[in-house]
Length: 258
Image (cartoon, rainbow, N blue to C red; front, side):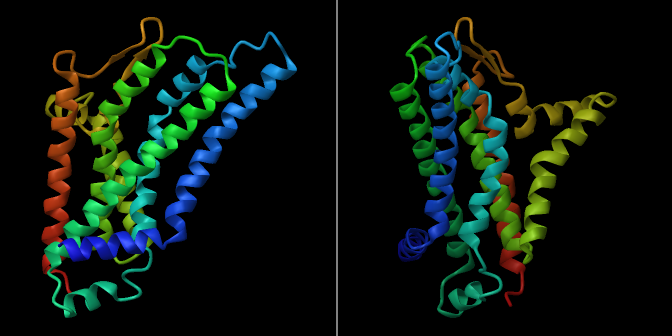
């Protein structure tokens, strides 16, 4: 396993997409702060060139991050199916379990590192360029990040599952979007009529993400569960990650590798 992880890390470190993804996302967030700074320079009474406004917008944009997480699996897998990399790995004696879980671990670690770097770039540029207001906004940011992290990892697990099952990149992305977005929306509508479906719908990651409410008056985070909310978010996220990890590995273990 360790040797396979090293080879995957080496591949990521020598893959331009790994750096371009982080740089582009960081650039877009930094530019948003630059725009606020320039507007403030042009108009002294402009009220939104502040750290609280900038970081508050970031906290309100987790839905976009949730969807973007699919891209992580996409460029890490690259053209594995077309290049017959899986077949070569198995022929060299690497077990399917090591391949599947090795890729999953590397994707999750890369995703967390990328998340920290991108958020760090935004926070640093905000504090360098904008007026410092409401220092409590950092507590709001950190608490909300802690709540949404298992939901982001869930997307990675789902995408990893379908990239192993479906050889087409478009098919894998479509199936992933169906699970992480279409399923919870559909269950939400059906839950209006059926109580059992509503209970299922409430704990699906997309709906848990939508249930997060940020109070910018007292800088508090309100989650779906009032009691033990953060712990329950992690339990729900990890449980659903486990479902798709087992599902993906089960299919891959029986799948003919071409």
